[in-house]
Image (cartoon, rainbow, N blue to C red; front, side, top):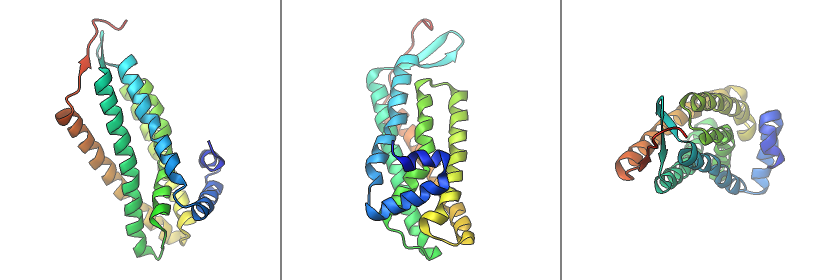
Length: 204
């Protein structure tokens, strides 16, 4: 794990300076990192739904068949990568109204780094418990917002007032994109892939 990625959780202001320099020197250097980090929630969800499962009643635990779990993991992975890239496209499009001229690669890279807390929150997929997932996702969303508001000014070299307004626009569009992609994923999962559930007689 590289230094800028660690710094996002310890010294985010310094991390954004390092990330900006890295993006300028090596365009698209974020891409291998995005593809690797997006595996975390997908792989963890695959393991969790096939081995641990989730409880629907006091004495019943439901698991997914291997094929269905693989489909779900692949769908989550694709949705994650597409969502980050779509956010990069939207950031690039909105930047025209704020006198900023970042490249598409830089915008996708910025979106990928802002999404880092969500990637690591995907570890809770190993134990697919609803309240635990909710807490982890809320915490990840809060810190992703911190990275967005704290990093946009540095990354795009904007004035403070411009950065706050731009970040708010990105936050709103990001919420819309997130909800749209998740709803589309769930609908496709239930109506297109026909999941196979495994219901053992007991928890053991």
